[in-house]
Image: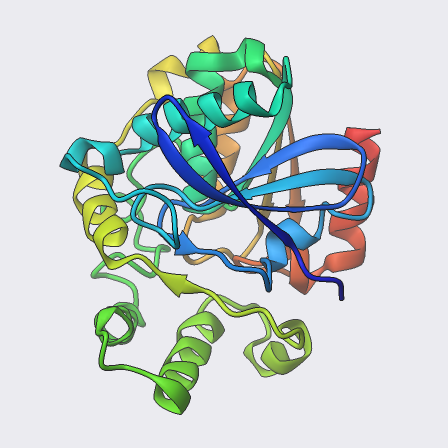
Length: 279
């Protein structure tokens, strides 16, 4: 698998570390608290066969600028930052694709800047706070694996968690979100390594408590493709169904043999659906 090309992009809102790969129509991808590097990202890799992909480290992630104020770590600020990157790259519009918290940023992108989007792809995501309202969510106290997920998240936040310990804990955390946990090594076989920005994760944990833009979804005026695993424990499928009902030009595809990672768990079908909607 070829490496991603790193670029530092200077904008009016700061300097951002962006990784680029592929040729074709532009697709922008980010995640609220992931720190990307030249090894790339499994979700972003899905798009590189047919598109030029821009994988963005937001503020306080990787080598992007640090936030001077706490609000710069918000989802709305992420959208404003992405807009400036788009302008610097010279695109009148591009596609935004977001998985999980990246999809939540995508929802806000669609609400506020539909004219900048050729299409919007939301995978395993939600337009509102999802943990307290659904015991199907692993971040809900009523979920049988809630406690273990919390323990793993806290351990992974620690700078002292390194090497084999970090890899083992990260694997266990991911397995909790797979329909077939025993297939972990098959799905995650590439040498792709990511970290988490603790500052961004801590901010998100507060921000998502009041996140609800469901009443604004009618403002999304770009074609929206919503994809979700039937068994998603992070953003349960009900939230994807809700977005599909409320976004005017939306289509929904549910992957019956997937949890939170349909682009790995049903990779062939995922790429087939993507190709049909992006062509």
